[in-house]
Length: 537
Ligand SMILES: NC(=O)C1=CN([C@@H]2O[C@H](COP(=O)(O)OP(=O)(O)OC[C@H]3O[C@@H](n4cnc5c(N)ncnc54)[C@H](O)[C@@H]3O)[C@@H](O)[C@H]2O)[C@@H](O)CC1
Ligand SMILES: [K+]
Image 1 (cartoon, protein in one colour):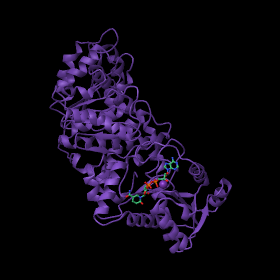
Image 2: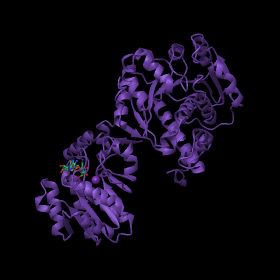
Image 3: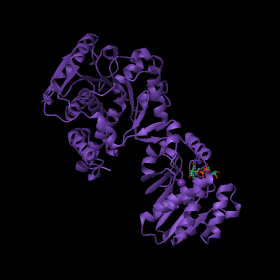
């Protein structure tokens, strides 16, 4: 797994490197030369333009420009001020060095001059704004960013695309859309989430020093990005000595007269994700229509109230059904009522692995007056528990119903409030978003995010079903459940890519994702076994 560090903690690595004799100036030279190497690797370098800002991000750009110039590449630096007028000492020194080496420099060009320069440029190096950037880009950078994005040139961003927050992944104004980002020392969360996903292109980490890895771990990574080989240990070895029960049995509890499709999709997904035996428990009035559409999945009709949701008579029956299965998913399409709140509360008391999604989470919010983090005794249990909130559901769970987490790091923070209050390794919160984090008490694992095709109605129900199936099939220790959930997210994401290929990136529906789940898991397993064989990037 690759560590991800909050931007403020990157400074601790920088300080640690200084202590072992690698100065900031030395780091800047290494950063600039890492950028230059990557530019050269890109090839077809008729001419390169390096847009420099006034801080150390700009300093990296000046070093890269001098290095490229030294290798005979035609390079022009675009700077808001003359090298002599750069305030920061480090950046001024490297800028003056590049000037003395004969690098061509354009100072404070008007917009039409920038457009003209870009029209003859093959590769842009974006070294305007790095981790020191806050707010909305001011002139001239706002203008330069717009011109660069409109130019059609290939773009390499230094550390982070200018205009993007490396911490939050949000961009208040326009940010550079790069083909490649060479990020210094370590991954930062904003590169992997929200607008960062579109802005960064391929991300290359330049560690800059051999001590970086050790210092990064000492700086306490906020998360770890999973690689395919991290999943090898959580998958059960393939065996033919199985029957439908030994492959895991899943109970899906959900549905109401208002929402019929959600529990069906979750149950189908659990079956496609390899659970050997799936049962669906729904309120009695909707059982016949659901059973009519389900061939492989038995449907159990449980007592319902006049509102079309589970009544209190269902509570004990659901618990007894759950105790006979290897995992239960509760929530899809269930609505919040006194009966469904009772069902969730009773399921939490059972001793079998449990996934709580959708209205199951809203029932927990109801039970805790929107403060699940203040009622740890409710969630503390002997068997694994996985909560799968999207950001609004997560907000409702931790008292942020009006201001739900707006970034990956804010979502991880909210999820940690719940898991740290609980304190046990049985609880994992899968904080869903355009980037998802699987947060356990010791570690937060970031799966490779799936395609935009996943943002479709029912997609969350599908993920709930996949996680339930994986819990039912697997024997992992509690500590590894975040990794198992991360694998479930990647299978879901890969299935989304297959569905998008078949039905179009906007046309794929949840049912198409369900149908592709088995193929997606096979393909990922194949890539784990033969990492060099290509496949999903
Ligand atoms: N952390 C490290 O160990 C290393 C950092 N390096 C580089 O240093 C960078 C960080 O340098 P700095 O802290 O100097 O910060 P930056 O260079 O990212 O930005 C600071 C400059 O941007 C300006 N700025 C901030 N917000 C702005 C806005 N909204 N509009 C216009 N201008 C704005 C500031 O006034 C200042 O001039 C990193 O991104 C990386 O590129 C590298 O030199 C190598 C090692
Ligand atoms: K940048």
